[in-house]
Image 1 (cartoon, rainbow, N blue to C red):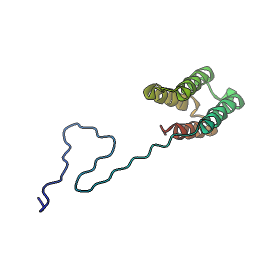
Image 2 (cartoon, rainbow, N blue to C red):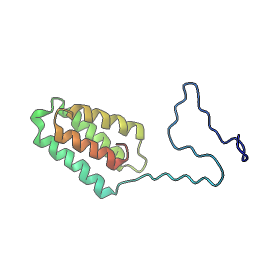
Image 3 (cartoon, rainbow, N blue to C red):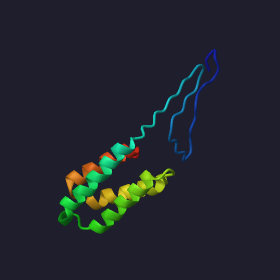
Image 4 (cartoon, rainbow, N blue to C red):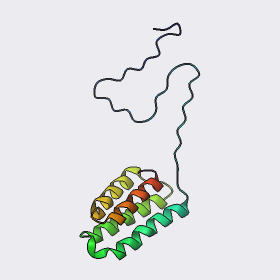
Length: 117
């Protein structure tokens, strides 16, 4: 204990902490969430669509990848995106195209644009 009192934070058990924690006098905490512009989002989605066409023979689950991309597009463009649904579709899409490096990279970039990567 200091002259200002105990400012410790104890997190135990099987706790999962996600997010920021701040304690003490005059503490400021800022979190920035980058949300891409609709143009950036459209560019990232369209790029994957073009790459899927270009590398169609290299993607064994092509139709599944297309459906996953459509799910991501629908959720990302909606006014009330379901983050869990988007994350799952993005994860499936990444798994389906993982054998094609340029597609895997594009999916990673899409995740970053959406704010999930």
